[in-house]
Amino acid sequence: MQKWLWVCTMAVLAGCARQEPLDRTVRADTPVNLALWRGKQGRDVAWKDFDVALQELRLDIMIAKAASGAQAIDERVRHTIDGQTVRWVLREGWQKRVERLRNEHDQLEAFITQNKSFRSQPGTQEADDHLEDKIDQLTAQRDRTERDIEEAERKLAEWRETGAER
View (cartoon, rainbow, N blue to C red):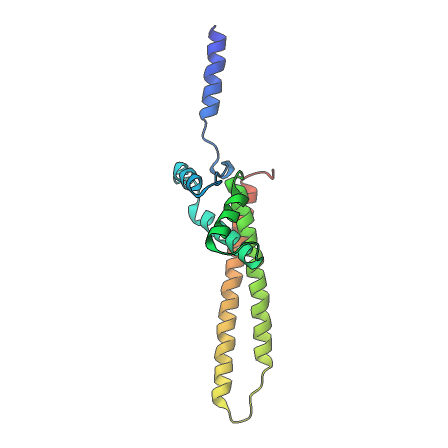
C-alpha cells in the first residue's frame, strides 16, 4: 500500500512540474482560446519576441497572398501556430524575419549601387547634394537592417541552444 501511495505521489508531482516555457504547446484554434492560453502563461514567455514572430508570420502570409483581410490572415496564423510549441513559433516567425530582412538588405544594396552610378549634369550641385543625401539615407537604412538581421540570428541561435531539435 505504501509503495502504491509513493508511486502515485511521484506521478502527481511529476505532472505538476512546470514545463519549460519554450516547450509549452500553443492553443490558438480560436481567438478566445489564444487569449486564454496567453493569459495562463504568465510572464515566463518572452511576449515581445512572440509578438514579433506572429507579426512576421502575418507579413509572410500577406506577401505570399495566401490570405487577405485581417480576419482571414489572423485565422491563417492561428491555424499555423495551434498545437505548436512556443519555441517552434519563435523559430518559425524569426526565421521569416531573417528572410524578409535579407531580401530588404539586398534591395537596399541594389538601390545604393544604382544611385551611386547616377551622374548629374555639370553645374547641378543641388541634384548632386540630393543624390548624396539619398545614398546616405539608404546606407543608414541598410546598416539598421544589418543590425536587425544580426539580432534575429542571435535570437534564433539561443532558441536552438536552449532546446534540442525535435
